[in-house]
Image (cartoon, rainbow over all chains, first blue to last red; front, side, top):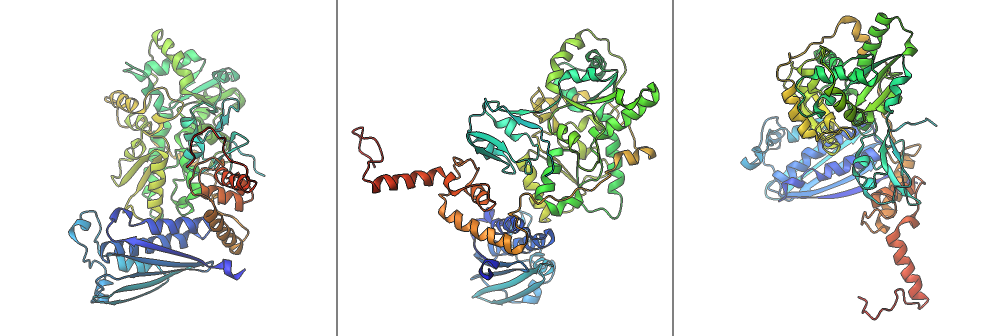
Length: 143
Length: 433
């Protein structure tokens, strides 16, 4: 049945409750494991999505994650109405971070979020407009 | 179908069919069916939580009776280091170890000695360039079984060495056979254990084709006898282990015993262990060399077969090992084969939704979501499953029924009674809301 071959999930990431950041990626990981996805694909998805989720919480004031899962591909769209990114290549470079102090004191803000998302996913694209928001699309392919 | 062995058994007369154990089991392995608890053998990891929580003492650990000592011409006692920490006013482990002979043992071989050798072997393993880090301890049988069913990504991280409790009988029996000339069947290696999971490790080992242990007796059974024996025994020099070996009895002891690295983490208690493993999988825990995980709070001193409070036991260990040398046992070349696994650990997908292909597992998933929408979401346990999600999973796997839901059944019954114009509740004069 073709309809049963796509699973759609939606998550809202709160912008004001940092302790809950990470719930979406943990939830998706548990579902992928139950479905029997290969451990490698599960790990890459969990790590890439966790980084994106933390970014939504730290930088964007929260946002939405839309996932569609098929046996061959785990596809995620992260969108927000946050401040946007002025210089995308700079944001994508390792070590660059705009994380505020209270977040750095918790061990975040190493500047590896976006580069890690690109590294762990098989497809990655990012678009952003300052003052409007950011949209990131990524996919992990199942081999 | 594979035959399973697990170290917990149910006294059906004592089981009331309450929901305590089903809610506590970390792999949701237990269901209440026909008013009695039943453990799914594929999912059980021998952590002992159900034994701990059962208020009616219906869940009981399995181990050998002390009479098993008499089954062998030459019985070797293998005391776990946690045994040393069970007694008040014990200043010298030699008194304890000498007294073990009074139970009928011909000889004592401390598991702490084997622990020091495994520490040495682990140090060497960690120094190899091709090793997947962090390396995860393989000593706790419940943790190994947890990883095997729930964390396939971490299976390659598990230390491929036998636990001290397995190395000890291999060394002890080899020694004893050489010294006494007795045939193998006359020599019995008997572990004095803080936990029942070691019984499962003996009967269905991971990493070894066969265990060299012959029996596992409980610390709580030897304790009262030793109390008495120690009053009438003169201590002989028996102990041959140091601080590292004794430290294995508590959480963090195995990791600290590595000496060669400070980049380690030690977690205890099965829920904490699960959290650590989840984070390890997601590479959230930084650059670690070694991770020690113990299912019991406090480490082995917290096992269900112990007598003393685990935290008091830890304090006693501190005093006992004050003047000991760091280690008195080292890995010698011919021990390598005895210490290594002879077969790999393999992931067992028993917690997955199942289905012969992706299409079927996706279909089961969709059906589960449909069922979850219809179920009340109270996770009350009345159906015998720990959560509504677990019941939905049981239904799609064909081992549960929608009719099991007591809450929905009540709603359906009330609707039927109303439709038949029967007052669903007895009229006792009080107003119904």
